[in-house]
Image (cartoon, rainbow, N blue to C red; front, top):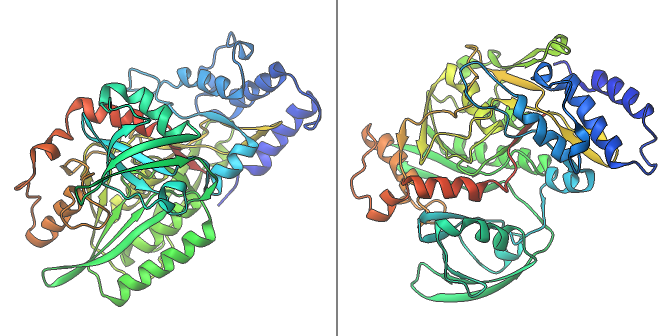
Length: 437
C-alpha cells in the first residue's frame, strides 16, 4: 500500500524551512500559521477553508485545528461533519499513542440519570490497583453526593482532570467503601476480558477490546492467544465488545479484521482510502489476508456512541462478507475519516486527511452505524457476566434466533433515556477517537 509519508514530508520540510529550525524558539503565530498552511494542503475539505481564515486568533495549533472543523461540509449533512481534527504536544502524544495513561484509570458512565457507574478500570492504574471494578456505583465524589446527569461537567473534571479524588463506592455485595485515588502514570492494556460460552450445542467466543492504540506487540500476542483459544474450543460465533473503543491505528484494525473475515473473503477488498485531489495519487486499497482458522458466517459487535473510527472501520470492512449484527444503547459515533500525525515544531497536528469506504463503496456514516437491536449498557454487571444486558441479548439471539427483551428492569430501560444517553456522550468526550495511519 502506498504511504503518504514522503509527500507530506516534502511539504512540511518546505514549510518549516521558511519559518525556523524546529529547536529554535518559535512564536505562537508561526506555529499556528504552519498548522493552517498544512490544513490548506492536506485537509480533506481544504478547498472550503476561506482565505480570510486567521490562524492568529487561536491560542495554539489545537485551536487552529478546531477552527478548520467548521468548514467540513458534506452533501446530505446540515452541519459540519468534522468533530475530530486536533493538535497535541508531542510529549503528550507519545504517551497517548503508546498506551500510557496519567489519570486515575477510572472510567464512568450513567446507568440512570442519578446512578453513576464504573464502566471499566485499567488494571495497572491507581483505580485498578485499588481493586475497583466495573459495575461499582459511585455515590459521592469528594464528599459531593450530587451525582446526576445534570452535573456531568463537574463530574468530568473530578474524575478525568484532577490529581486526587475521594470516592464513595457502592459494591455489588451491598457494602460501601471509600477510596482516595491519586493520578499516576500507568500502562494501558486494550484487551480487557475474553471467555468462551456454551450456547446450546455450540460455543461462542467473547472478548472486550478497548483501543487500537497501545503496545502493538502486546496486542498482536493477545490476538494470537485469543484466536488460538477460540479455534481450539471450536467456537462457531464470536462477540466483539467495542462499546468503549474510540479507535486508533488502522494497522491494528487490519490485523483484527484478518482474524475475523471468513475464508471466502480472503484477498477481497477490505477498505479503500481516499484523499483530497492534492493527494489523490495516494488513494489506495487494502485487501484481506486471512489469519487463523475461524471461518465465521456471522459476527456480533456490542457498540455505543463511544465506538468510533478504527472500530467503525472494522465493522464496515466486514459487512460485505458476512452477517454483521450491532447491539448496544445507541448507534456508533460516526467517524469514517482518518488522519496522520504531522510535525509542527513541538506539536503534532491531525487534520482529517482521508476517508474510507468498504468493498461496496459504503462509508459515509457520519451519523454512525445503525443498530440491529437497541439495549441499554449493562453497567450494573462486570465484564463477562452472561446477565449483562448487551451480552445477554446476543447470547439470546444465538440460542433462539431473536433478541428477547424479557426480564429487563426499570433501571435498564431508563438507561436509554435521552438525558442519560446525552450525558454519556459528554462523559465519553475526554477519550481519544481516531483512525491513524
